Image 1 (spheres, rainbow, N blue to C red):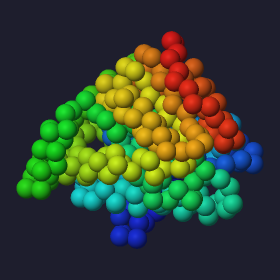
Image 2: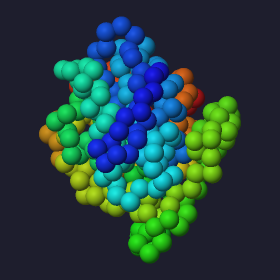
Image 3: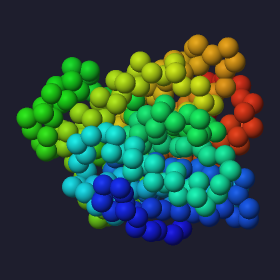
Image 4: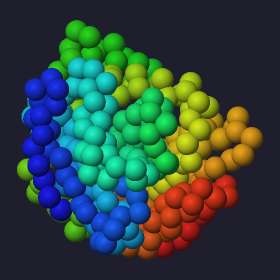
Length: 287
């Protein structure tokens, strides 16, 4: 993996990660992290993709990881999309003509799906992993937080538990000692902007015509698998030819791709997505 500091058009310094494929790449995967994370947390998944012939790129969103910006704060969701665009720009510069896939994890799935909705012609497929479209909080509370984000934009309102992200004790220990996510607590404005994006996606899913691969664990306490199933149902409901796949892993938490057996199945799904020949399945696997 290599890291490089690049400058956003608005002057913000953004940290870019890149992982070259082994040999000549057959495609590119742009990965997007979510909350309690940064691009460096995607290294293991990227390395598995590298071994399968995919070149990978990711950015630390502004205010996260090694990127500039007020910590964990964003005042406009579109700024996250413009950060993600920098990874696409670099990928297309270094690998012109190769198909590009986009994978988002958790809140990064909201960013990735929102980007895909606007730029479907640039993508070969979309992968959502532990999609944070639905979270364990009622709508009225999320609407209240969105309202509070006006008068109190920096009020700390959401502190996720690292232990909810993985059943791998070593991974949780790594998160607990990672200074880049230390004491991460989302401000009301950040949560409000994410919730606004979720509500736009809710009515826009049928417009997504890309091939999709959706992966979620049933023991995810940070995001709800029902949200991933809703995305799949809505995204394929109006298609004459269904091109998509949803895989539900029983017993897995948020970072499904941090476990070898589960990642291998997700990687197989990506290979199928690349071939654009996927059957609709609802998988329940015991690991």
